[in-house]
Image 1 (cartoon, rainbow, N blue to C red):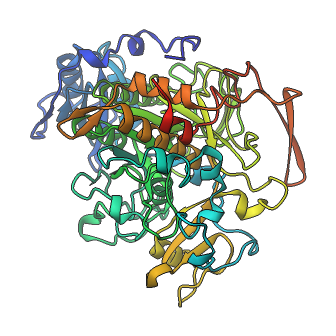
Image 2: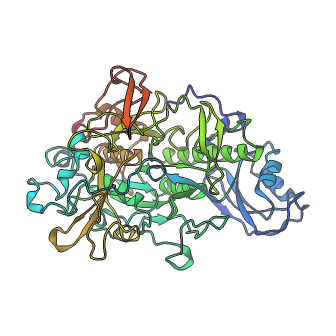
Image 3: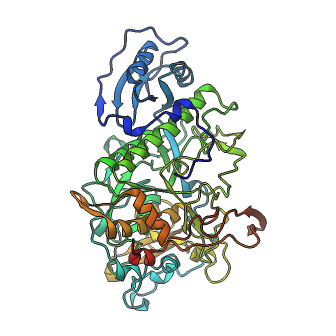
Amino acid sequence: MRRGTRAALGTAVAVVVAGALTAGVVTVTAQTPGGPAAAGAGAGAAKDYLVFHTPNGRDAATRAIEAQGAAVVSADARLGYVIARSSGGQAAFAERLGREPAVVGVSGDRAIGYATAARAGAVRAGAAPAVPREAAPAKAARAGDEPLAGRQWDMKMIGATPKGSYAAAPGSGKVLVGVIDTGIDGKHPDIAPNFNRELSRNFVTDRPKDPNGEVLDGPCEYKGCKDPADVDDDGHGTHVASTIASPRNGIGVAGVAPGAQLVNLRAGQDSGLFFLKPSLDALAYAADNGIDVVNMSYYVDPWLFNCTANPADSKAEQLEQRAIVTGMQRALDYARSKGVTLIAALGNGATDLGKPKTDLTSPDYPLNTERARKIDNSCLNVPVESKGVISVAAVGATKEKAQYSDYGTEQTDLAAPGGDADVKGRLRGERGMILAAAPEHVLRARKLIDAKGKPKDGSVVRDCTGGTCSYYQYLQGTSMAAPHATGVAAILIDRFGEASGDGVTLDPAKTERLLNASSTPRPCPSPRRHVYSSAGEKVAQVCEGGKSKNGFYGRGIVNAQRAAVIDP
């Protein structure tokens, strides 16, 4: 789509065509194969591995797995991988499998990702209260506004207001928006009316500790360590969902598309970590269940940049990165082929993604395993640099690209409000961030509210309109920008989608075209070498491209009001 200038990923990956894969998931009863035990494999607890194969290579991959004394547990023909179970060490097992031409990637089925905002740049609590701790009374709101609308500069910027998109395109309630994140608090008063409990799923199992005994998710809250599909123990996913589609119900805030349905497709752990397989499962489920658009405000780890042939990495590490690149691309392709529009946060590393040089944060799981390594433009941040994904940069209240936001002429498709606490004037601090719903139990656990429920600092706002109190939190990051674009996409799908068995459907290519056409173009700053001042330091970033498409703003800042009236 827009990655044509990227360096080739290598023959094995390049030949993958998701459309050639036969749909279906096959579960196999695991048995100990009769083949020889893997050389050097010691006894130990069995572990599962995702083994990605070429479109016609399943049988060859299965033979290679069994030759190593491992068992095939299940297979997903839609995405072209099998799950192998082995008690040997991952590196040796992966390297041996990698010698089979039909195998294009191998990854352990373990936690390998972080929510973008939680990893780099989300601000959860201010150092000191910068705003009143209680919400302004409802009577202070303008007619037609939600009680906290006065704090939503982001909605005003894109025309998501009672006199803007809310009036012109209120929504039919037929668009299904999937939030692939840490979960959604489906009981939150400002989410519950639009929460589709029937379709929501949790694809993860909580893990109290990591392989080294470090605390990961903490104690399990539910039997079998499986949270219900209306729970978010992190808060990131709830904030994202609220920005997309909090309803206009006279409580708290309203989202960009208050007439859309929210579907929880949970792929993130309580800790903010993501697993590769839950990410694949969430995308495949979205494809098979009529989801119209998904928001992905995270990246898949342990590699911030996935390099399929980096000499600085071991063979096993290369195979793991190939598995991430290949597996996610297949899942994204499958979802898009079924009518799912794909939107992702660009990232918070303040990096020109077209010219990366060093990765200092990978691999970051297990903990404390990072090392510095040289990288180049062939290395991909997944899923935002995957094909078919609409990537979103963040701007602050002045419409200037946020200093933390990644950028790049190849990578940046659109921009949207993501917050910037460093902006000057009345919107400095928390007020310069994005306010959206937060789970009360998460705020209590983080000691951001007291025993009586009162916020302890300006990062949290409580609204008790109508006698029921609900909570909201200021955060910033490209994680907060992407859901604004997702909400605008929902408006467009609702307006131009064709009737389907589950509501409406719109070709993702057309949705993207309309998103681009309805956005407000913004040129590079002058001079193009823009200097940011943050925390006493000056940082320079260079914007390349013209007004119609550039590395800071892509094709422009999303505009809900224009999307509500645009003529295709």
